[in-house]
Length: 72
Ligand SMILES: [Cu+2]
Image (cartoon, rainbow, N blue to C red):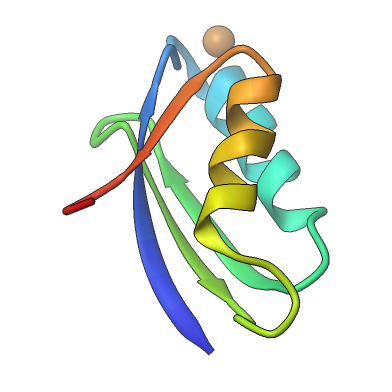
């Protein structure tokens, strides 16, 4: 398992945070996801054999939020 933190843009309320969290959790290979509205970030544990950070960024952005890998 690997852990990444994505900076998420465009979340305005708990509903947005829940939506982003659902998107991430429904991806195959994501073991856990925690989204913080306050910090505007998502902390994700994933199996690198099944998904990757680019894919996770794509999924979030496809839903109308912005996402960027921290430190990338
Ligand atoms: Cu919202």
